[in-house]
Image (cartoon, rainbow, N blue to C red):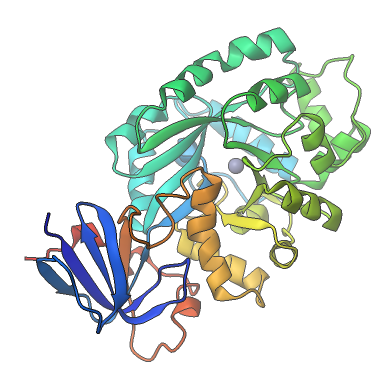
Length: 403
Ligand SMILES: [Zn+2]
């Protein structure tokens, strides 16, 4: 079947160095070849010159909650995470549905800013139909909460999710499960979710109050559980830090995605590295919720697999991963730009269980590629991509009219 060969000033395969004056050959939605301008083509019918542009894989937003899109701009910046969560809980009560009918808009916004795949956290499977109708791809994490959930109840609770996971839905949308956080999910519920097929996701080591709760059983998270009648009087605090806790419930695994990691200490980072887990950083959200600043530079330096997420529109101004990368660059100025780009592509795709098809330009992979406009005079294209690329400068290759 004939295809197209797209030429551009730069091609970023991600898993190998950038190619100046490169091209990508696409046949039937798959990359069939990649090379530099002088290489000879094969059976390609049209050649498309994108000139001053960068061709790269669509980016991966490894952690968001599109379901909370109705809360955009309505939750003020908070001094602490529990304070922010209280504001979200009260705002959610005033909405008939948390997404406020904005799910499709949010999915389009992701796609418009070059995102091919999202790791989306959903408290209900309501968004499944939206994803099935949109062209964006998703690993949809059905998220569970319940600090007072016991073993039997846990199995019943996760049953619908287990059914969807077994059905796999379709190639573009996969359902998986998530535990909200150690202060909102019982150990029994963690274990039950952990028995389902991975990847699995959890907010971990986000706030200092979470560490306080695990270590002493006290603090603002306990207050919130008590107010909501979810605190069991028999519960004994584990008196361990977050990564120890993760291990105790059987979640310290290669196919576990831990989100935020603001409070991680060196030893915890090393243990996540050893386990092969993926950390998703969402630095703009951490700033807005009052959680603090994640040790991102240190995580890269110690060899942790770092992916990038925007988190929800309740704590981030937009769903543009390129803008999130700008914040990662600011917090980790010495990390090579290529590593940060890998975080936003292949590492995110691998974390979401799609590392074979997404996140890089290689023969045999999905050709979900974007063209990013390249202004004149840019000498370092990788660094340029961290400067906060706006959606107006991004176009999907498949949307380009090749005549
Ligand atoms: Zn989140």
